[in-house]
Image (cartoon, rainbow, N blue to C red; front, side):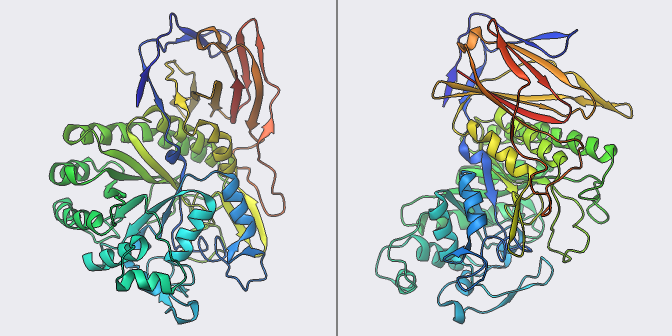
Length: 510
């Protein structure tokens, strides 16, 4: 829902002692930032599910009915709005009946995509939906199109949402769940251009139309929002073809984009830690390309159906695995660089908040740009976790657009914006988040508060560290975390923020 701001004059935003630019909001629209932009993704990959989220009821690791207690509490505290499961590539090999019923009777399966790991299926449909209920988050179910059938999907939806006296519903009740579950989003296939079936867009569009019709017929009038398997980063033809052929059969369409320090899918992607400035600069630079991607795909979608939302349901940094970790499990450390990538990406998402439906970082525990890492009975919160925690104030808040000319961060003759920001309002309180990506130079920011009717600063917080490749280890778990910030002040109605190099700051005003 759009709301136009009518401000009499511009706000002044000064970016350095010698340069000043104006922030104008009088002619722009303000939108509500969907909480679902802060969504998470849990795939059966490595130790994301097993030993990450789920340890089983008999584990010596403290748990609540099988859910690992420390991880559950960390995710609960993060206010997760939506969780995607069971994949990812894994979804198109997953057959739901393997993961329901008495645990002892569930067959083991080989995870053919991720390391050939054998899984006992102790975490399945009931465990996922119960987890989401405990977390208070929405559910995003990915169904098997690559190796499944329409009937498989129909039976699964009936098991989850059905109420009538029929075999699938009775099977759910037999397994201990009387009430139906709620599906909020249903992903029909995943990466159908690749691991989800290696399909041409024309073929997938027709197949999607078939599946999407039955998805609503068999979801027992709950009508989950249908998410079409969309493009791999800059493949605009996929989006164009799918929207042209099936744009009236969906509510959402997805987009996947990963940032690689070394963009080589077949070779080294770059180390997860111990990197130099070239890979710091390159990651932030390529992260900024999310703006071009989101705008490009949104423009194509709007040509065919302006009601369809874009979901960036896989995003984040993908590096080489941590040395010594199991091949194919995609376990990587998480540095200050990755936290800055997350904050600048959020600022881009906010810019398109009126057309984005949902975004899901990859992934929630122990895989890629994770929120949480575990080792035996230990857990550590990553720098990216703290960014999600800091930015939670923007969930369901009114986004106030800002126009400004950023100073530049230059490396080896190439320049990118040094400053990224978001301003939002909720319940009469303003939050301004500022990220300085420059690893050497501070930025001085001043904001005239009079036009947003703010008069005082409540508090300020910061995420930073001495080096861009610093991280939280199990030995030193609090190297990077949210800390109080004393570099912001208000004097005569003007907010002044002294942003250190490589820092993320949030200022709360009223």
